[in-house]
Image (cartoon, rainbow, N blue to C red; front, top):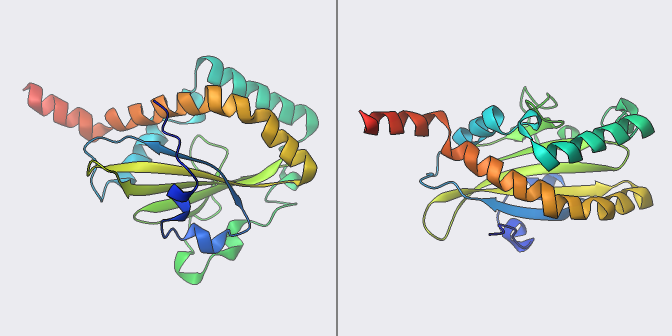
Length: 206
């Protein structure tokens, strides 16, 4: 079952990212099921993702897609520092109001190509910039229709001119047919296999 949501599922909620990145367009919004999650479990989900859902966890076609992408970036200098936040693009960290400025802003985010922008109790934002685009990975914690909380992911992008727009169009089939379906399985499995869940299963088994 697809967990893709309309853009309004992101824009209708009072996320802080709206005031920080109004010039970015919403590319994708997805929901990830986290059965049994409560209002204070956002940090638990983030820890589960850090432990079980990094780039090195990809397998099969997803791993191949990323390997090809990084190789193309190496060949055509898409990912050189001067093409990203160190050169062409302004970091979102420079836009943050005082109450969102944090010590780890701009630091690498685990086993991912992103760097941190901010972390809150119920939302976070990370960013990545290269020659193709500047993108934001926004995560939010939302109460679903069944009462449980779930993870919402929004990808916000600012393509780098015509080249960036063509790039986004070219990778769309890979995102929707390979990357996002694999991400759904991986992220939801990370929640199910989080340490707290394993501890509860062991207690029940005793």
